Length: 112
Length: 112
Image: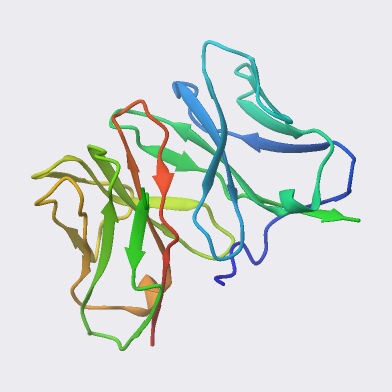
């Protein structure tokens, strides 16, 4: 499949550990944030989102934290599994028409 | 539902050739988007459409054209291919301006 992110920062974790992936966003006026997961050869897959009037949102095994003071977003994955290995992107919605601005991505490598 | 489908999966073009990347969705989504993804980078918006007959430029529209004659289809046209257009192209769709964007599997284009 296509190689995505040849020179991306990589987070290596042991299976079963918790993972934290960080993202800095650019526009203090952004009102909506999303985390996507991208496996090799596939399109981005929605994981979880959060609106700017919240600071935390939980899903199944995932939590997103939003710190608007420092324009920082994080994705926490509990009990990381080999199937979580992928590139993770944060995106912010800035402006109208649902236009998303994507970060560069972080590669998560899960080791048994 | 097939979701968002893209053809072809891979293509090699010579400089100056033209081609159309096809995108279709069967979810009756009003909004559709074209992104490109370069190695080590996040996705950048090329063009988007908020409904049949309505299109607008994104971040990096130069060298591309789009049309939206039906709700289902959103083709991306490259008229004079250049090496700088070597990239992976993703199409996405959403119900409206606030909905999550769902991505297709991508088209890997190489211009030599």
